[in-house]
Image 1 (cartoon, one colour):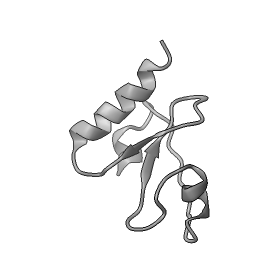
Image 2 (cartoon, rainbow, N blue to C red; image 1 turned 60 degrees about the horizontal axis):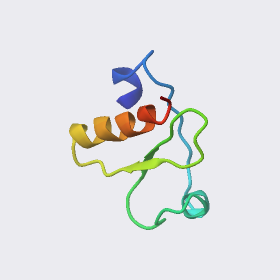
Image 3 (cartoon, helix red, strand yellow; image 1 turned 135 degrees about the vertical axis):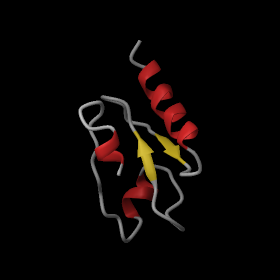
Image 4 (cartoon, rainbow, N blue to C red; image 1 turned 90 degrees about the vertical axis):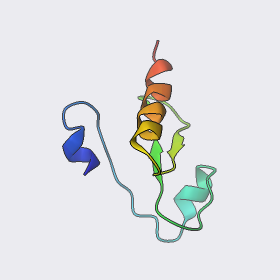
Length: 69
């Protein structure tokens, strides 16, 4: 759904992490539900989207984009 909504605006990728190894390596809790972590271009740290509201998603995007300027 996100890739359809934001097609041509942002690049999206997916990673299946059934063991939780990658999630832990990034510093996030590997337990529980799926994670959406938003990284800015060239950034090594991301912002965890909680999945609760579109406003929070847009806030996460803005937070990453502001690092570019």
